[in-house]
Length: 229
Ligand SMILES: [Mg+2]
Image 1 (cartoon, rainbow, N blue to C red):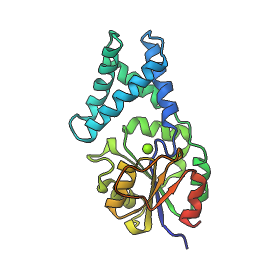
Image 2 (cartoon, rainbow, N blue to C red):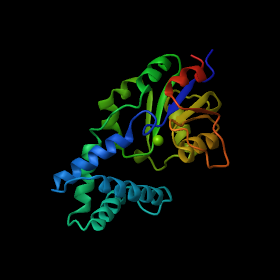
Image 3 (spheres, rainbow, N blue to C red):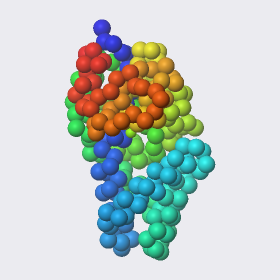
């Protein structure tokens, strides 16, 4: 018998290589408005984006405002004249085409598939995430996909984990484990929803929080052993 009946996965930084896709999509979006993209643009974008997402997670701005806010600030910082909303839309279009997998992601899902239910719980925009899941081929390996952008809640809200378990066939929280690279959204949310948690920590970073995951792994290859398949 497996230790769990369902494995929930985060997408970005866990199954999908978000950083590579983000860099390429930003470079293409800037090039499309005649700007030669460089490392300074990417560094500034990442810093701005992290702040804008935190504001979104605190519900200070709406999902629709994310694009305008982050690209408005980016354009202003580099003194570029342009329409932040149009640039944001272009960026999302390119981002939807980015679907590089994290090392071992497909192998881990294939090892687990058929033995336990597999679901994805991601904070992001519905159209972008669905496009990336289809392009990566991950969608055909998953029993359920839950995207915050299509819902009135996001991780770490425990309700989004409960919804994923319902969609995966009604698995009780204590029989499920959440795997993700973000302690504040994936691990904390799982703890609050009554699931086990597995922190995917490929760079071996320190945990600055007062809570701990049930497991910590540096490679997705460790996952089948934890689940017991
Ligand atoms: Mg993540």
